Length: 286
Ligand code: AMP
Image 1 (cartoon, helix red, strand yellow):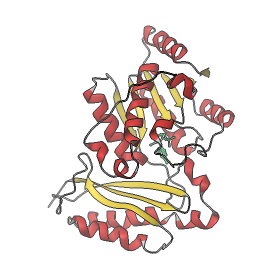
Image 2: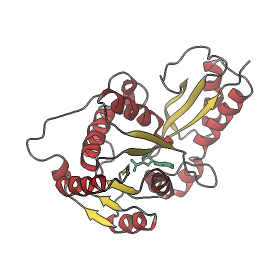
Image 3: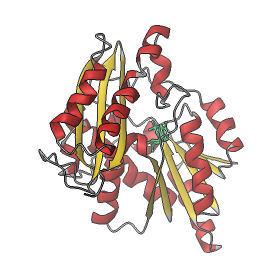
């Protein structure tokens, strides 16, 4: 596996692959890789001849006071896991490389960025849109693979690709979960043993609402109430939001339409850890 740390080397490598007629897939990550990331790398392989994984803990997508400094990092382990999963290259630039002195440009995707995560994490999606743009320009991919785990992020990236005319196919990979349902996340290492048990409540809440939706419940407030009822089982949980919205516009009508695709979203804090999860459901046709 190639290990690349500068944008110039990365662009040269990508250009060489393109000249040989090879399709490139990129898998952007912040590292501390787990099975969720590795599933993205394997899926990328099905869409392209060359898989480039990127590893960059992007400071600009952390709001002030968030966990940027203590975000878990283990480059040597990531390098090994990435190679084992079949990545052809790992692009792991420094902060100085991505944001050198005098750097001033920011990419903002309006609309879809302003709700949910955008509301609770000031500037988060500007940081995401900016770094994704830079990673696309560094890795020159034909395909980009992102996880459903960060559903709103996939919508922001889809909008970015459309608006800036990136010639890139977006592939969204399913969420990989622990056996008890907890969505895998690099942040799960922050959880104490007790919090780790309690954290399963997010998925149970999503499942409760998804079952109501599958049974024909179309009233948004009822779907949200179904999630909240389960989430209350863990009083220590501090809820940022539990919501049901159109899966693509994130609009929140009082009543969803038969056949509408709905996303159920939860974000909550448990001690020092902020957790997010979501589930998509298509409402039954009448
Ligand atoms: P992160 O390193 O957390 O920024 O995540 C990098 C990519 O992996 C993003 O596209 C995430 O949505 C995706 N991802 C994170 N956790 C999971 C998971 N449990 N299952 C599938 N994809 C995931």
